[in-house]
Structure formats: C-alpha cells, structure tokens
Image (tube, rainbow, N blue to C red; front, top):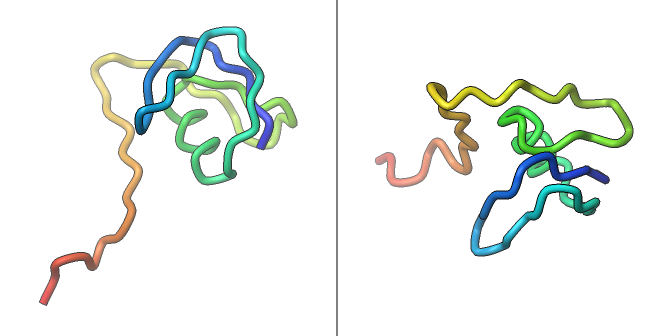
Length: 67
C-alpha cells in the first residue's frame, strides 16, 4: 500500500516523517490509517481523525500463550 505520512511517528524502530510517501504492507497501512497517521493514496482505506484519548491496537496472535 502506498501511503502519505501525515504526522511524524516511530513504529517498530522505524521513523516515519510527515510529508514522506512510503510503501508499507496492507496490514500495516490499514493500522496506520485507522490511527490517522497516514493517508492511503489509492483511497481504498479511509483515514481516521487522530484522537489522543483512544488507542488503536493491532492484534498479532490472539491464541498466543493460551493453553
């Protein structure tokens, strides 16, 4: 997914700077769009309005550690 960075942020040790255009995985791009940090340049995923009172979680594995 090709995205435009709307606000500077760090993720997994990578620095994303406002104004950059980057290609990220679809899963990561959707997560960033839901947080309001990036804009999907194809327009397929809507960009949320950032809200400092909410957290957007990206669940990796819901069964990890469950016996």
